[in-house]
Amino acid sequence: MGVFVIICICYCGNGKGYKDGIDERAFPYYEKFIEGFKIKEIKEYIKLFSDNEFVFDLDTPKAGPRMKKLANSLRDKTTDVLINKALYIISNFPKSKLSKISLDSSYQEAIKYI
Image 1 (tube, rainbow, N blue to C red):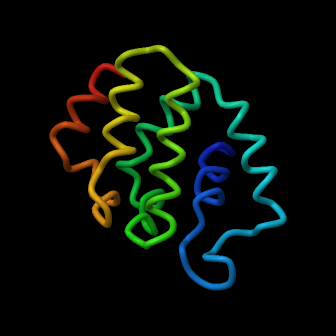
Image 2 (cartoon, rainbow, N blue to C red):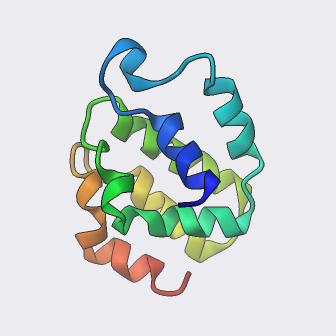
């Protein structure tokens, strides 16, 4: 697993425990790393939704919305239509179903050409 994957998981937390599973002291560092994401990292991020470890906590009330917010914010980093379509699908996927997005045909179609 790449560093950027760990950063995304830590940024979104697990929705459990103190501060909803996020290390608040480290949170600004996660944000700084994410600001440095380029197209390569964004493409990898999009494809990670088929990884069971990556999506494990995404149905929790806090982690899922944070992951969707992250997808939405990454849309500002690229003008690539295909990448933005996939990020749009992630950021607008129904609540408490984000961990199953890889089974969705619209997601599957969107990532085909990424």
